[in-house]
Length: 291
Image 1: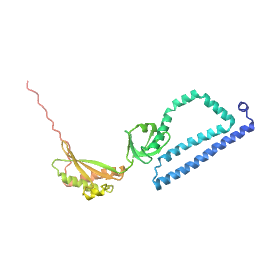
Image 2: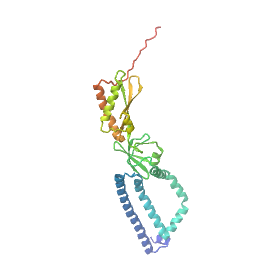
Image 3: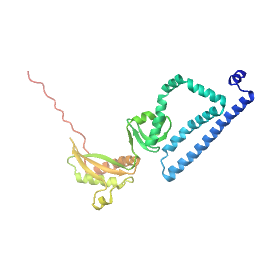
Image 4: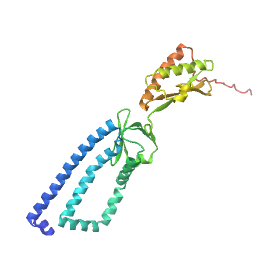
């Protein structure tokens, strides 16, 4: 201990005072961090629920607070204590090779931090959005940290993707600008079935579902355009192929609507004689050529 004091040219009282000062600064930083995080969490919840404010940037700031405050506290300690200030300047001046090694080793970490900042600024997605990242699972964005983005899929599993990876991927955002979804639902009926009756059944079953919304403009309503548009899109090998356009409030309700009306339309088709064909194949066996 005496050797350390001698090296820094400190008396015992000075060392004790500096130690108490450093501890006081760190304790103040800890208390400040707790207060700011409590304030941010309360503000995020209130803003998200009452004002419909996007919570993404606040959550990112909340995750970054600890790093910023403790780094500032340590820098403040080094700047205020004269002996540590001298040591700090010396270390920074002579640590070029170590900085290069650390910088090379932490390229991925800095890349994730910068990518996270870009995500918060440009907002390709936000906390609470339903997204599909390239070939990964579809799910809800749960959190954006300094290093990674957490996505909760529909099986309640968490997908943790580094920010640098997610920034380089194609993102399918189901909530960007407008959450409404237009389902394209396909049905094939036999050539012998009544096309007009099949279209009528599809329209009735879709409009009867609780998740269906009428997305027509007033002009389209005045013109008598149908709320569910069903088009004959092509003639297949064994079926006439129809496509229904059905609107829902969001992707989850759209999926529920699609699966429900598939069941009810199948029942209606069976009751009213609309056949859903299956492919037929004719196999021809050629006989051996006569010698």
